[in-house]
Image (cartoon, rainbow, N blue to C red; front, side, top):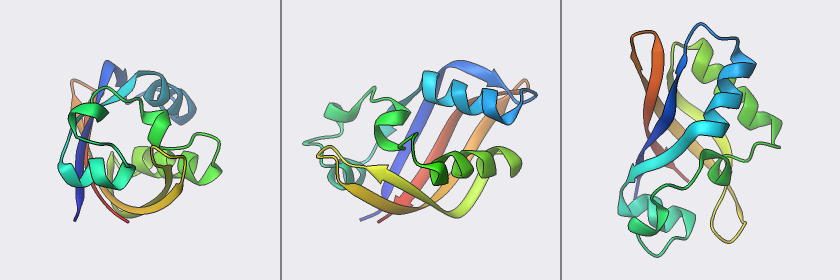
Length: 120
């Protein structure tokens, strides 16, 4: 029943940039690269294949200040969160409140991807 996923960045982002610039970069360049069937069900997609390439902002509603704080916490924690709450949208536009574990991969001072698991 747990959602497991991986977001990739088309362009890795320097961990030295200010938080706001990193967050902007996440929204501009992060896409869903891999997920399990639990993720497809959670977000109302007919299959995992139908989700491939979906942008971060389609899930993690940018206009919700709690989500910006979620991403700030991700950055401040050294790109690792445990039991962090996010406010997301499914395919039908319904609001979902999720508890997430999130681990970023940093290579050569740049974040390149994030693996996560979410519970509704």
